[in-house]
Amino acid sequence: MRKPKHTPAIHTVTTRFVSAEDAALLVSNLGLPECVQGMIKYIHADFLRWESFEKTARIANYSEQGVIELMPISDTHLYSF
Image (cartoon, rainbow, N blue to C red):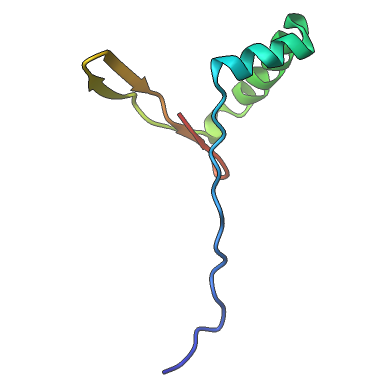
């Protein structure tokens, strides 16, 4: 049996979850104006490259407590919802 010429790299994927407590700590440490300005900067940069995103319709999941709607979006490097 022949061996492949190269073995594909194995990548570890990590998910970053930011809780309400994490967000509150961030705002507390940086200050509200700095946090809002940072978000404005990232949102503006994303809108400038809007066409590079793969956009998908919202995905609804139902439970006894209500509906969770995920809004997935990705580019060639990252996926988020």
